Figure: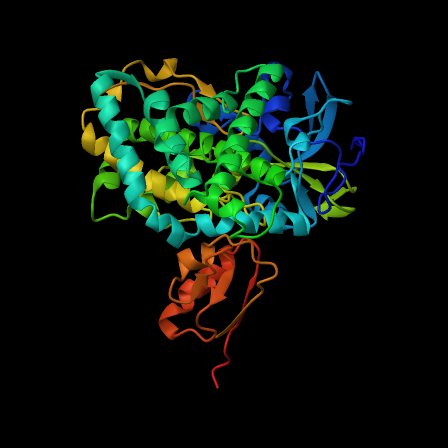
Length: 425
Length: 68
């Protein structure tokens, strides 16, 4: 395996794997990518590609070379079986790690303290615990009335804009953006500006310099929010953080921490809402189950999370020499895992390629597993439990406005998602 | 069955509460696990086993009682 150059950055609790860069700035440009972990079958955009499935069926990890024109080639070990993916996520000697930035260049997350995914160990735990109280099941349950109100507002806006709307821009993206705005304590009068700033960061089609600029705008926005809450602490998460209610942190750390929450709380849930809407329009019998009060909405959402597997490339690096799935690795070697193939592993669930909303909830890997498991998973679940049935209840005749073959998807970034979803209400 | 939890390694994921809300709770400020019943009633055993199995930090240990 290629040894990556080692450099140091400030902050204990992080290991020196080299500068860190956002995946979407490195692995996502399709022209420079050697491989996409979220590869789908062209004929069925919900299913893993035949190539990925063959890798899993080989029963062994696959050595792959991720070719990056900017950074050179990086060799990685790709894990595709459920058991292996779960074991990598759960191993505390395997750290979250990004692909390094080009030599001499700053990356967004290495320039910004508090960017949670790049931390490991005690510092990671300290930062994570600052926000976890906000995302507990009981905290999220208390947000239900707010989420229901947001969803109804967006449905009203859809009805006013119809009959043809883009469900991605006008619902899938706007619901989570408003919800995370409320969670942070963004004043409602400023939600539109907040949405514009956060949407800029989630646009994977932007070239590197524009993506960096979008992140700087988000940091500035969040920085202003932190400053405002110092003067006049609100009752949102930002207000609680600046008053130290959940523990101590510097303002810089808070900006990085809040920035990642905005990004992670936005595009992931948006991807799930868009793809779920498509899947349920195409499979009316499953949609009927979603709408049937005799069936658990929570179980239905759990199956959509498993089946759609929207999480993107998840890179890890081993902290010491070790064997992973029988494969010897040296400290610093990169490991790539595919939640998509893990969730579709026949050794994990029966008939894995069937969407069955009556399925017993499974321990899927969509939110990851281990110490980096998704901070906002319970919030995402409740948003979906409210947003999906409400959409079909309000618009029972909703249908695609274009042939399904014309729909376009983005993959390989932070998430797998629809670019747009034109529908008739 | 006897349950022990490791607060030090808990990552506040809330999976245990989702699986067995009668047995586990979370601290309000940082979400760290609170064990409500170290010896859960028979009706909760299945939920507790699931909680231990899905805990992302492997912070829940179970000692299955020998049938004495």
